[in-house]
Image (cartoon, helix red, strand yellow):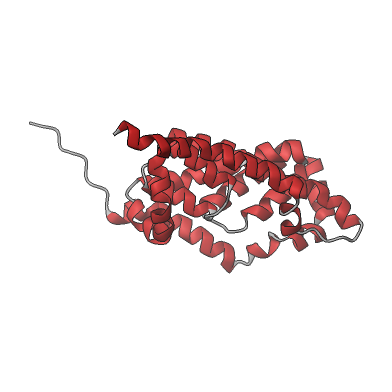
Length: 242
């Protein structure tokens, strides 16, 4: 007698990860937790946060990484604020690696979900974005991933889902995400690292004000151009290889 095939997973079982993610995001806003992820909250609670980190730095770093990864996994729109928190709490050179690592983990969760049976459902959320990215992915997955991460033309969560729907390899997704978000993470973390002095002086910090400075924009634009070169070269030589 042949072995019985394993029972097929029910639709509810297949949707469980998405339900959990959706419920977590809804609960996050329902409980009003999003109010704590603001620059005002950072300013008002900076002494308590500093004391918490000083009491147990390793535990603080582990918890921050877990919270950041979870926030990205549920597509919480305040990730940039968390990046500033990371720079403020742990400094530029410790905070940036933590941010990059946590963001990559969270992004990979949604990416893998989009590559599975959840793809059809997630495509309804990122459908329009995914179609606009499709051509870029086809011309060069890795180069296009770098461009999308360096220049946030599309929402971070939309890139995660679109990459999964377009069948981008896990290797290219991980490399493009991890290295592509380093410049932006460094910039946001530097804002957080400098926030303490600004708060003590009674000054306000502005994301737009920092991001639009020439010393910030110039290196990022340069990296975007470098990432685009392989795509442009491939487009130029494509007719000749046909």
